[in-house]
Amino acid sequence: MSDYSADVLIVGGGLVGGPLAVALADAGLTVVVADAEDPATAVQPEFDGRASALGLAQQRVLAAIGLWPAIEPLAAEIREVRVADGVSPLFLHYDHRLLGDQPLGWIVENRALRQAVLARLTSHPRIRLAAPSRPLRLDRGATTIEAGLSSGETVTAALAVAADGRASPTRDGAGIGVTRWNYGQSAIVCTVAHERPHGNVAQEHFLPAGPFAILPLPGRRSSVVWTERQAVVPAIMAQGDDAFLAELGDRFGDY
Image 1: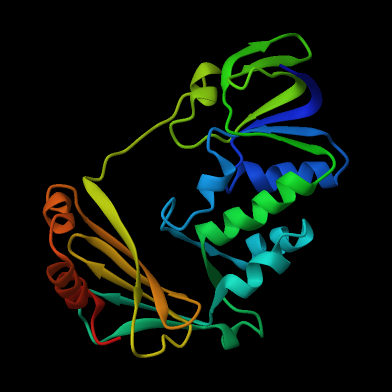
Image 2: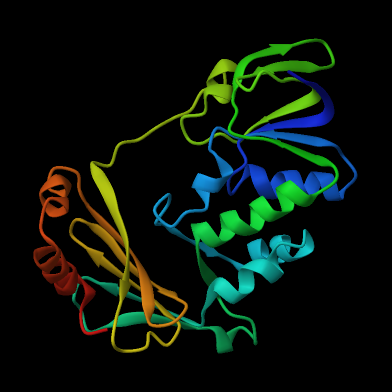
């Protein structure tokens, strides 16, 4: 059992809490990051098959805190965006050359982002990573907070940050409410390989059930975000590979 004193305790060391910890530590603050996931598990391919879109502003933040050099080789540039209504042959077209020489954004697998974040969290001299660990209690005083972690450690800090996901227990414990709206939709997310190059074009089709996005990844691969009605998603996911790919191909179109 150990006691730690820090300027900031961040609960959650993922894609939000991790970069925040690096930025604060670079600014001279001491930071403890308590993350419920085992770091070795969180960077495995099967942990999170999603990819994230990064705009120019986000890329500049990652560059400023030293994370971008590790991410860039694993990121695909978005040079064009095409948006279509259903199967209409007409579409909106955005080309990065109309704005300058910078890409419109980048698509990066979450695993690559997590790997870069973890490398900095474990090597930064002003960051203590407590993982896997989560707060069992969080006591708020007049000027400090004290957290008792599941690892047996106690952390005293001036500020606690809740970055532990959309169902954040830390946020709920602080009495911070949220407003939710159910659209009756679910997103099916997968990565596909294809014979033709994607040309660094991001495609989005607005279909009756919801948006269907095809986002470029390095090589001849794309990340697919397929929005469907919640009622039919279980049947789609229960299909064999051939049937699933046939359904996907109907929506994918002539890429």
